[in-house]
Image (cartoon, rainbow, N blue to C red):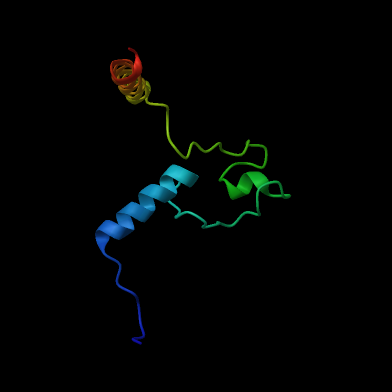
Length: 94
């Protein structure tokens, strides 16, 4: 093993910082905890960079709902169901 600082590729560092920003809002990587205590403790707000009275952040792991994608998926499923029904009728619906 080598000793000394570990070299991190810039793309990796940027990705980790982006994830940390998305999760924590301040660029910390996921799982990193700053100077404050854990949420709900006596310094709960400080943990998130607030003043002790800030509410804990809410996370949206899947991001906002993309209704266009859901619409395309629903139409695709509907077409598949209609196609299957027509094939079934053609095969068994004497």
